[in-house]
Image (cartoon, rainbow, N blue to C red; front, side, top):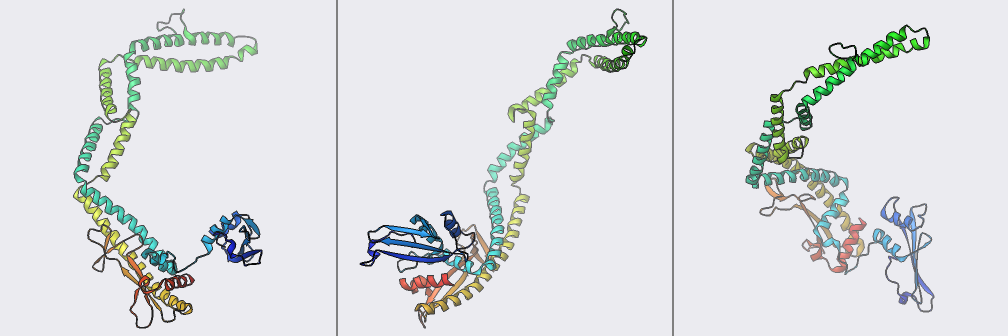
Length: 424
């Protein structure tokens, strides 16, 4: 039924086939339900599904799930979710300490799950602070050298104090200063074309003079269609007047200034020294400086910085101790309840004199353990699942000493203990 190999020897002599059938209850959205629906089978209204395996006398087998024929592999997948077989020779999970602790946590539910989640969250930050404090302490010389290089670069950049996009603006300014004579001639000729000659030469009235003449002529026309054009020409005249004024101002302010050009070229040289060393342009240099300042903050190896990290470590340790203690208390309570329930189950499994005990003790930290935590004056190991070691002890009969379950129980008894645990 769990998808194992079919054997013709399972068919009774004289019969055509053997079959085994099982009804299983599955949840709405659990893995077992998805396996059923993905195979095209249906779950009954009561949440159950019937699995069927038949073996013919000739060795051929067929598998059905929820009334549908399915590959035998589907039954194997389903069995992983809904069937647990315990036998004397099983490699039982119960022998692993981590599994024994997981048994308690599953039984306790949210009573352990809640404080354990808070413990893990604080522990993650605590470990990060421990790591950073250790790195800063151990790599102080290397980090100090890197910090000196970053500081030198920042001092060099701060001395020049570049502005965003300044290199582009300087390039344009240098072009203007270097071509001042050409620009002046161009602007002067354009001004004359718009406003006319400066000496008032009537032969060179400029665009404004020509438009003015057109306005005068059209304003005296007898045809209204021509007079209607006058306002549009006056608008053009106003616009040209503004352009002429701006051109005149540009010419007046466009004086050759060798000293200014030299100053701007020197500033450009300062910026180029930065862009050769730190980035392709000024904006990149500023980005490098910002990143360097962030790195310097994380590389602070001063006594004040180390003391701040140590203080944060101690604050987190206090929180971690509180959460770990809460987890331990919840596990201890659950252990007592679970041990009583399992002992009761064992009486129905031909182990009437057996008694199960579950101990919850803090795991001592070994020498040099970087995850050591001080609780009640003792150094304990603060692992991802708390500070506790859980152990299942079994009294095989009245008067027998409690021993670890794998030492006190035979193979068959160990299987029954595992079964009792899962039943509870």
